[in-house]
Length: 220
Image (tube, rainbow, N blue to C red; front, top):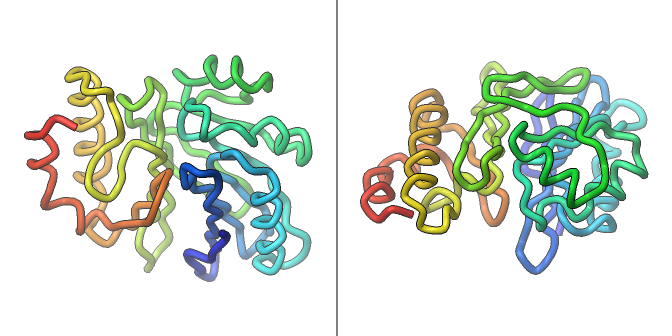
């Protein structure tokens, strides 16, 4: 399934849901330059190809996939990374502390290891890197902001409707992830910010904010 999620004068966001795990692959296209950034090349190159084909109508001229950013190193989020890099020549980026795991699984080289506060982008689009440690050591989210529009937060498996990502009931990992999600997401972005998770449907920070104490109390 491929769908249009958002369209502004500057940006188009499309999503493909792939695999039996309902992985979300997000494609951001600059409506000005046609350059594209893909988030999480998960599982199915055919579905991603359909997504790229749909996005051809979102750009003034031939679109170009320039960059692929991986939110974390788990296998279900990177199974299409190698073939997509090989087919398009796009550069691959990921959280610094997940780079080795991704390279070992895919056999490709990560062009840049990302840290909290970094800026990534393609001509016409820039996004901020948010480090959200705990689901994996190098898990990241990406934030896109545009004047007059809600922020778009692409959170991988670190934040979902109803809670944070899996930390295997490890108190240290859970507390680290809750602290990062609280301080780096909920404390900095308003209620209308849209959360696009690694699996399933989107939500907003406003819908999730009242439940933060519940998540801390239950410990997952």
